[in-house]
Image (cartoon, rainbow, N blue to C red; front, side, top):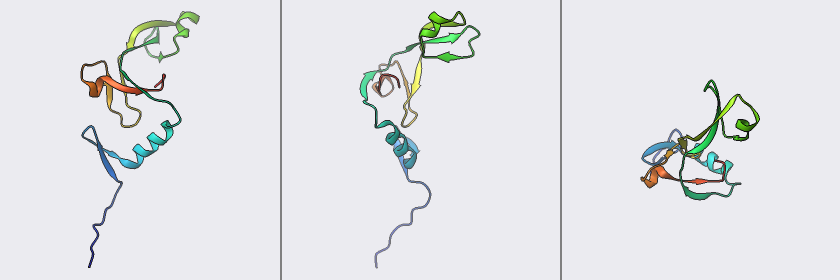
Length: 105
């Protein structure tokens, strides 16, 4: 007699030591496949912020077009992986300091 172990709940995988819902990871990957991704060191990005500091945009032309925005060089100091949410930031630690980009994300 062959017995099979019953598995309940969502399938779980570990990424960077953290448990993730496998189906959610698959959906994230599927939505990102249409882009070309290149591995690069993560560097802080320039952003513009409203003068009151409440809103941020990566559209740098806003600083030239409107007196409401101020350019902040290197103001975007951290991102998260679009697939698993892992923190990416400027670091000598390759696991945090290197990621894949499509030129925007």
